[in-house]
Image (cartoon, rainbow, N blue to C red; front, side, top):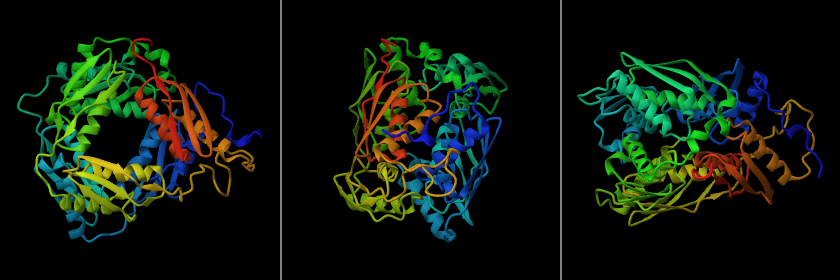
Length: 485
């Protein structure tokens, strides 16, 4: 088969060149859904990426930053993207943000107030935890028309008994030790007067940001992370072998329960947790579908978990009529920045939601289902949306200079080109580039085989294949068993 020169992979180097990082991010933006690649400029200096230009929503702005942070060699991201979104009357936007918060099963019970002026939402109130505040901000970012969120008046009570400095440090270490996404052995934590100082080495900018959020989650007033350095070699599996060592079932079960305790969606339900040789079974009831899905995801991120069987049942606290649920879903889809322009058919029967219609790609297909799952009263979502593939998914510039700075050539084999694009995305992923992932493509269907370190890596590999333009992904990647790693 003919070789495609411009898609060949560069040799892995100890330090990734700034120009290569910028080129990789720009190409990832081109094939990533929900990002306005043509409006964003990327510049990199010493591994620090600056994003400038415009995007059309806060969700897109955040997504661009997350994509850049996950690229191998990126130390941090300075996000200076401005928001250009269609103007909505203040009264209409306030109605939308209030409905978004009210219809979300978690934030609907929070005592908060929103004011809107010229697309700026000022939110105030008192919450119990830092994570509850992040959840409110996340919901608000999902409303089309919001240009900025002012959250300084959204206070965190934190309870009457505040953690001491030593308790904050201990909690941070415990959370990191049980989080499969973090190499905690290379991270040092010290706390003085509730100011947390982080030092050591992590494998990506995304991992660094995650550790900083854990520190705030544990009660930090301020986090200093200038001595927490990013080096892409720190994600290599051999350096994380302790993470994959067998753990006692009782300890795993307690770690899963502790993870639930930190999740504001899952915490109120207190799901039952049983573990047998690393296999987790979740039992009990939750009040909403989003909590059920998040509980499983939380459990999969715990060290020692080999697989999760989710037996949680969704039992909404109120008997909401199907007609109300349907209207709330339609409203949520209409105000969403990613899928608000599509025409959906929504059918609800006894809390079970059926979504029909057409969207452009897999990302929009999954996002629409996720929006529906976040509405109170929804017990299940059957996603029958058709992804037409109408948006360009080549990952290669249709005209102008080639993305990788090499001579352009015709692509004689679409399947071969797609496989190369998937490998390219895996190659630039800080969590995947070193792992044993094999890619084969036939008629636009990608087959992933091999072995990865974690369930998080398995999901990421599949997601990158869809982003590269795969029509369907058959993900047969295996995860290292804790007992045999």
